[in-house]
Length: 301
Image (cartoon, rainbow, N blue to C red; front, side, top):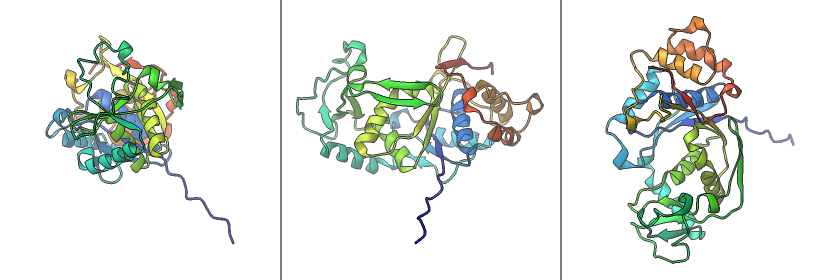
């Protein structure tokens, strides 16, 4: 019989913004970096709206982000996923973790934890055997086995969760699922092979790998891009009223984002349309040129 043939490997990336305001330059950098990383190797690129934290979501922001991505010619594959439609899946995976003995209920308030050394959870409720309830925070057990990974931009990383983070929350006391849990489930179920995102999430990666291992999920490759910061070193953010990308003139923002990522677009393309810029950028994508630093000054708008 002929040898079985292996299905061709298709890289899969994603962009997962929170709908807390319009797309600004820092978010555009993350979207562009992940889009180019996928498209440069013929991969798929999913779009996921991280609206799990309903109180922070701004009405209309998700659609505004989608329209801006379309204006920038950053087109995605397949339907848009929305975390708010996937609560049952998150509950099911929480139940798997609970059944495996990986979780415990925590009644600690933020005020009680203000004195925690280095912000590390001291394990106050670990052995308390509090009953599980719909309004009880749930923490996942950790240990000090080193969790190591090689970031494609920042190089070798290692963290000991028990001593550097502590047992961390996967469901909040208000009933909302925690980011660390839902991003792991979504990445696994969307078949994401390459996570390209901002450096502010580098410290979350070991926690996510821990959950991947507990749930039997594969671990994707990671690449953490420098954050775009203002003249005072503050991260550009929707909450600090960072100016939105101009949908009527998206080309200059894309040009600036390519320069921010040290991709050096040719001067002849200054003023080009988004489609023309991306047609150049896909075959020219060189992630090794991106500085291995936590932050870079954003260009003046």
